[in-house]
Image (cartoon, rainbow, N blue to C red; front, side, top):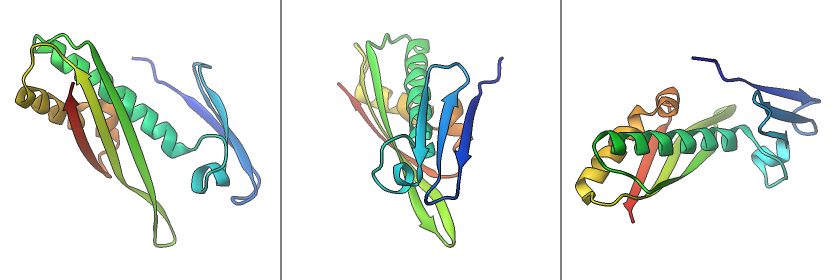
Length: 141
């Protein structure tokens, strides 16, 4: 399979510098800064991009898991919250929270929860991010 790429450029020091991140496909490009990462400034940040990757991967993987078991999901919507926290002299991502809502005709709650839990540890991005705790709240609608 083809490797997926992204590029980031940072100019200046950490507190007053700024950068730009771009997906290799050209589908997304945005600025980022100290303010967008550690405060409420405009632009994106690495944690937001990780959240997008995890949410996208999880939604696709859960839909596949359900379909492979004979269920036809109408929709799977995932919100990922990536937490950045001070750790010693630096920072770490100690936790990622996933909230998923899925509309899946004909499935019972226990079976849905089983597929959601399996997907939490099985989707490729979750595997890549296995260091931080990943919590899951799954709701069948």
